[in-house]
Image 1 (cartoon, one colour):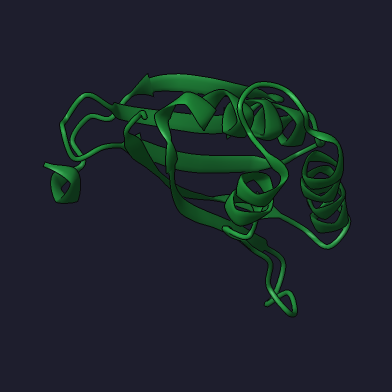
Image 2 (cartoon, helix red, strand yellow):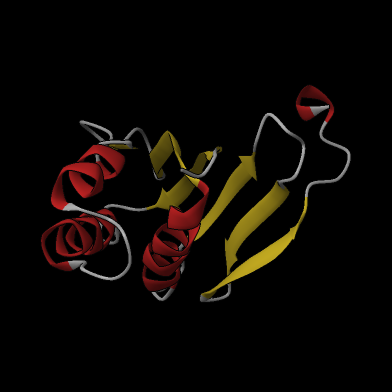
Length: 125
């Protein structure tokens, strides 16, 4: 059956990169076929992406938040790895569960996803 993990965070874009993020999200929604992710669940998980209607000043924040099956974390990490390849994009995502097995942080920086343990985050204790 598998347990659920919470994935939530954001990407920091500008008006020239937000469309690239949308394209990657749309491509993953239309074409991803690895693993146990059926079309219904894929569309459900992809609905966790939220894009701003308009950019306020110089940064557009793209948010993601959803509780997904633990064994679909690879899907999210692959998608974020594609997005990390966009020039000058950064981001921050927290991954954890109710059992305390996961306390991960995925930082999008310098064209890669850097995974580390969450440290000194008070609200997740």
